[in-house]
Length: 262
Image (cartoon, rainbow, N blue to C red):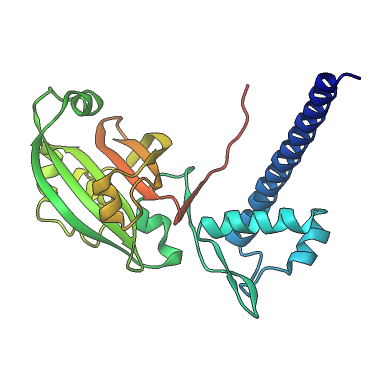
């Protein structure tokens, strides 16, 4: 075989070896991600009541994974701030996410009442001219004044969400003297209008925290936050509360019960 052919043949074998190595790395990364998802569910559901995960060897046996895959999965959870490695102890749970249901219309304090006390830091409250998208959703004329409220909401003192709220002014005026620091807006709206809330339209997506939101939520700039857009209606169908809520993604988990209907 000519030298040039031997060189090309050797290079081809090398390329095959590199490709196989990359494929193995991708496979292990996929398996690690799958294992991290399973472990995340367990720790958020209280599956490790003593706060300590099983040893890596036990996890490898239970999930039929290699030790390297287990270590990579635990690294993913460590990056999320859910676990940490303590010398002489092992892998321990250090983070907690609070459940926020999506199948009932409730305020944050009502939703998380079993997990502690929700308090509100009212950063801004007062009349503001309604931008066109807000006016359209609330069914008021563009430029009409609405009540604008910006609140930083904390659970047990930890920043949880930044809420931007728009309310028609004929209803919102009564909120100016209300206890917005300790009371959900939902409960206040039902008291003011003397009728229950009916339904809400929601959109949930992940966005990157801008500089302002990150600073207020005490989160890293650019961190992923859960953005919940919610338009709430009274029982008679009138839209009364348009909210843009940025949740710290490392402190909240969304869940709901869905029924299939064809």
